[in-house]
Image (tube, rainbow, N blue to C red):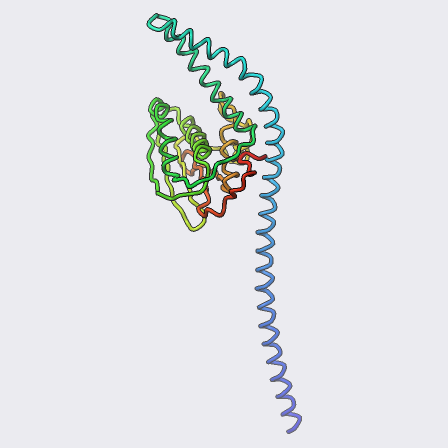
Length: 286
């Protein structure tokens, strides 16, 4: 009898120990799964940091080269622009007036290219203040509206009144480059949609076009300096946009749409404290 009681007690103790071990191992499995997921996140972040570091290294070398090129070209171009202006006045009202305007247009195009190269090459100090992004978007669209009309591009907006802390002029340069890229992607016309939304952390501006879209193998390259799939592109517009977004503690993501076209997401910090106000902050640091 006593032996039976002892056996029952031993069996009960074994059962309880088994249940305790089962509970312990279940918690241990949860802990291992949590640590594995955290390790995967850290590895993904490390991979992204390595990509950014590699891109920044390329930007340093390209920036130094671009600064030298701009310096060599801009001096004679200023003289050409002066003579072109004088020629346009002399030929005003004659049959050759259109030719002089064509020269002036070409010079303006070269100046725009050089401006992009200077933005790329130089360290720019941003002037941070409250910026209503919708106003910057609208001004950028207005400046590009003649080109959009010529290309037959219909611009549709859905904007909010969200405010970020940033440099309005540099932010405008971001939108100008992104919008110009979208318009040029639709030579036969189409729809360009610009929409905004926000959460507790970011204001997101989505720019959607109906062009040919970006090839998946080029998605990681489009923000690299001098990479362009366009015959007449310099490959600096998206690089500059990427760098300016970096100085605002924001970022850009690009995707190819399932049906047609591309979509760019621009993330601007909503929290003012997310952007440093120190005097020595360089917007275009490489």
